Image (cartoon, rainbow over all chains, first blue to last red; front, top):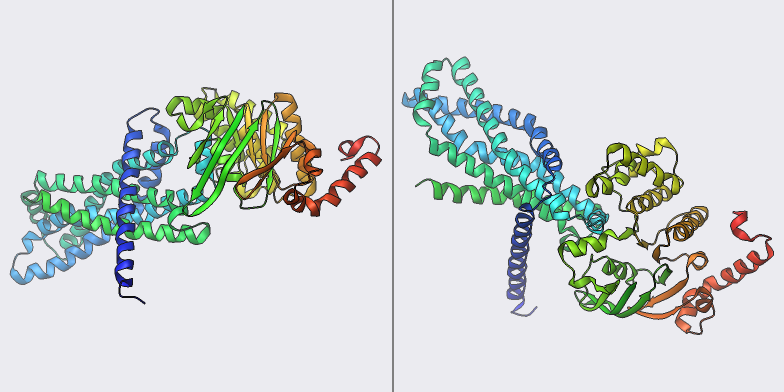
Length: 263
Length: 264
């Protein structure tokens, strides 16, 4: 092994990373371009909202409920030691609205809908169904990617709101019904601490995550033959890649959106 | 009608097509033969614009498909139908929805008219059973899938049909049936058809002309008889194993009164 070997490997990885990034950005720009022109395939968008949004409601409600409950339980016993249990509602609402709501809802959507999107598009790609669409003079971007991007952008803020509301209700159940804090104190703390900026931060994050998840999921499905090969193994690989990449990007973008919006 | 001029295609370092030249006239049934994995499907995908050549041009009705964009390309694609190797049926849609799909997406026909069209095309490809309509592609046989794919292609009434191995993996009766169907449709609609096939000698029965792709180039073009009698050693070695079969087939055909078609 020559001395240059590690550098060659590193160089190849850097080139691959930059080239993938470029392809991903081109894929997104093409999809956004096709989004502007008719036909708008409204029925297909509604179908995808049902798939990404409606079918994830139960998962979101369950995770929201237990996240709120455990957060309330943990915070209550810490706050009691400082004599500040009246601030429970405030801590709970701010944590859920600013961070946990958008991030956990996004992670749940990745697990339930993002992975399914990647495998569906990946299978369509290897079984020439996307070629068949193209051969019928139907634009695959317009038919497969645009409805998913729009469905993601529309669904995520609604799912995040649901997560937050159910989370606060879960927190209320533990903080008020179980530990005995007064409901007036609980809700007053929420009303006192939550401002419009917090809600906007949550909204921007969820909009951004909706786009991010569907973009990565669709891209990974589309490029299956180039990066992972054919067959069931390829579909498995590309789905894992989509889930891992989407999750990492959600956390990275979460930090950057917060750091921009916090000032 | 279709002219391919000096077509080159590379995938990374692998050169698949190395200067293909081919001319297919209107109303002709053209068969493309050659070893597996040597670029026949790649060539076919260039004709519909699914792949872009590294060099060379593909002309359909004297229009260079590589230069067409937007509506012009769409208009041209509307005239071409493709039957993919595996059928490429949408696996989340039923047989009925698969055939109705292009009509729903590209025409303004009512549901009733769409149903009529779908049933008409299905009966043409020999799938009249109503229970087939609500089945998914995974629930029907390979031969039926090919027929459904053909019906989906025919429902838009294309002038040119590209068949990518329409009979591969089917039993001899199903092969014969599909070939008869192609022959019948070609006569009825005056279609121009390009068929990528390995079915020698059966493909010679329906093809007006046959071309052989070898090492990325067309090495011979001619009528089925010319191909059978070709002195090209590569052509001979490719079909040598089948030659006996071909001759015995023709002998058998001569000996059977009324021809094989009527017997099958």
